[in-house]
Image (cartoon, rainbow, N blue to C red; front, side, top):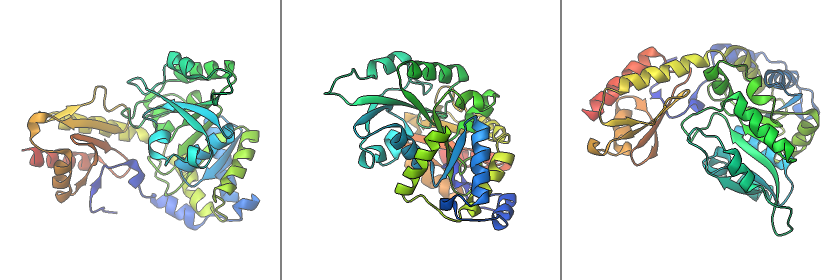
Length: 347
């Protein structure tokens, strides 16, 4: 398949692989709301086993998964502590507030995307009827707005121990949790077993066309399933979609290292241009964040438009800032073409 563009805007643009398309076409189906879709059931069991939890719930998107998790952990008027640059806070429509009446306390992340334990401690509310009740801490791993950075197992364990000692739960927005595991060469369970719930996406670097899975205890997922129904998430013969997710988990995780390597290769290629300034430590995984130097004389939007003419799509995240994301459909030849296209635009 030849795409008209080299699309680096996100790994959400990935298309299903031929193996996925075949699995989807031949998937055995049933009514998932009745619990009778064998392919959905297989995906949920596989996903839960992968991340070391008891049960899983197939949902339409990561946003839905995070929302359901927070509605399950928190009641009306309860509070979740999360980062000021967290995807849930910035990009999920304020759903926890509008649909769940869940309050949020936002604290600044450290440069690596972590939430400092001292800052978490300071954000926990006292037992006072004037204040919402702190119920949940939400982490993001990898962290999008902090440069695709990842959290190590020791940190996840430390936050979980901190939370549980205070009667709090921990949810992880793990949209790209397998990128975090592959980057550190650790079993993903090291990053997921200590927490109470985890959402991860099938439709980003893993290449499935649709869906995420929310995992946790059997009791938690039973309650989460009720919330999914409330939100209109009962998708009936959803095995057509789940089949792609099964292939994704079985075949696409380890190859994420190729995306990371190509992000490094792209960074090396672009480093020859003095007009480009890279974030420190970028890329940490499959995302490359960089800025135009003031002397470049162009805006990010102008560069992006000129790159589009040359068949390259990039993400513009600020007046002089880009995000370039590597994925399955970007190979070594495409990396070289992107480096050349930037050279033509920057002169």
